Image: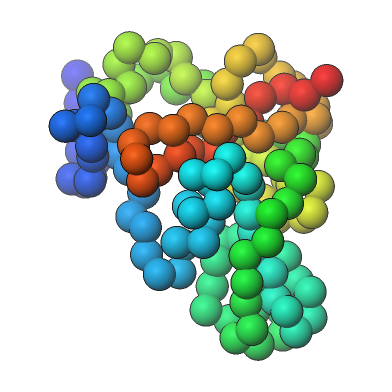
Length: 147
């Protein structure tokens, strides 16, 4: 059944057995994905004013400095919101229905959209990052209820 929406073609790694959409790694996002492959969550930090921000940008959203670097963060935060999907918008999700997408406020401040895995959680619950290596190039950060 279709509701009039068709997802755009996405880059996938079907040859590796992973058949879900993959992120496009660009020069701007490369630091994030390099850290994730090492099972570290990292955020872009302005070396001029110290602002920690996500998503990455070529200049700091606070002071407009172009002095940016990637630094590991705690990987801990609070669950701000989540939704449970009961429809597979890509065939690769069909065997995982229902799956949860979440919004996490990291202890360092930035918001991150990801997947909520493991036991159910409630808004405000503490969460911690876990990593899933899906290809040689891409390791996805996901979150689970902590404590």
